[in-house]
Length: 273
Image 1: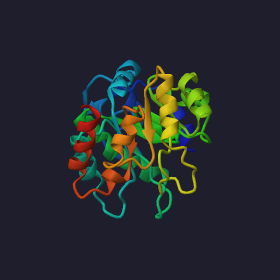
Image 2 (image 1 turned 45 degrees about the vertical axis):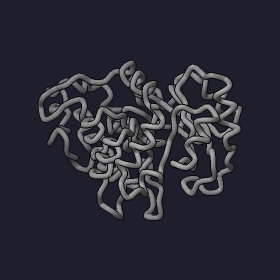
Image 3 (image 1 turned 120 degrees about the horizontal axis):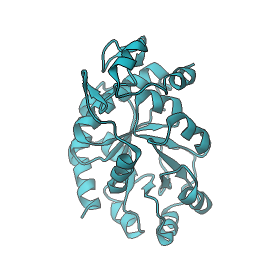
């Protein structure tokens, strides 16, 4: 149902408040209406009714190329501090933040996922960061996300691109030399993640190809941005950098930190040294 809804509103011009009002979806520019956020007015597209420029694909891809630190976080349902956490992590130097909530509380309903993404979107607008959605092209479109990240078993890139359009950055997970080689040249893909570098509870049971995969990818010098992923923390960062990575994806080193801002700052400073 959600996919049909978001496809039906693709023709709306997000920078035209009159069209949005006529669509019947603008109850509040930053608030949900019947469980769906106003996808056409999510920051940074508008603040209140003050229209601001829409980031285009070139702008997003330039910011991705400059990115070094990519964070995946859950919705922090148990703690109830998603907004505060996101502000701290982004202030510490996180360049991309992705909502990935597959914890013990069960998967988020689409309505709750969109609400959490709205919270992250507002933080990203304040800090100039990129907002990423995991797996779901329909949710990425509805949330006005900058980035859609796809796993190997998710919607094919060609179909995802039809849903989100050309201006959304699309990333790929890759877990072997062959998958990374494919992702480096696959049409429609803008970046990829190589790993896991170490086994991680985020992906239980998944084989970790380790730093050999990072070395293989680095040796190819791909023209697309790529990130090392999987079990990376402060103690292991030097090994990852020595293997040739210049960008990383992290989870627990920031999400479980007592001071997320300080944890992010330490990583960001080392990545940009």
